Length: 305
Image 1 (cartoon, helix red, strand yellow):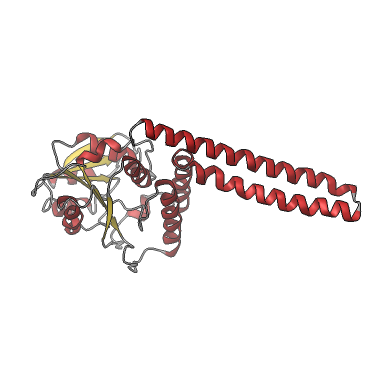
Image 2 (cartoon, rainbow, N blue to C red):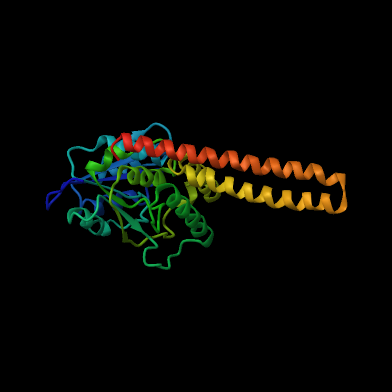
């Protein structure tokens, strides 16, 4: 990958939706550690844009709420000639004071992308249990799809060397962008490291008032991860379920056929045939995964990966 100067130019991108309470202080504190702050107001109905601009940020306004992925896409398209881009949320849950911690591995040449993790050292946070359970599921799904082993795949506090930005496709507009960017970065061959960060879910934050329902949010991200896995990890997506169906079909088939032979029950013949069809369906799915995996490796080889 590329190399950076010792004192890099840094841009911070802050997606924001109805964050008039926190956005001013977030921008002012962020400016202590970066050269440029871009706030992407994603269709807010409050004074988010006005306050962010008064604090010195460059503001991009969406006429309607399009989602975090769309906000990040607009922000990344607007950066100038910079060395590093930092992303953080506008609701105050990320502490800009920790920005140097994210910058250091890139400046030292140890990483291309740095992921701020709330759980790297198994820290106890005030994240509600049901949210942490959902995040763990999404972490595992992201690991399967990307091959990365990260502790906080849904973190929005990250740093990117700008030479990695061409890797990002921004196919999804919503909150699944966090996982999508990690998958794109892994496919690009970026070196990704995690650093420990704190998080503030303070009572003054209005994040839970206007943000998406956590269940629908988690399910939406999970569905997009499964769609990405279909192309990135066909062995997991197809072969594993196919093998499960093959084993299930064989087990049920032997059980029903044995019952048919032992007791001469004609009624056991139909379940035996259906079990065999389940096994054959699993075989077809597994072979589909193997073929797609082979095609994927061939494409990578032709692309010089």
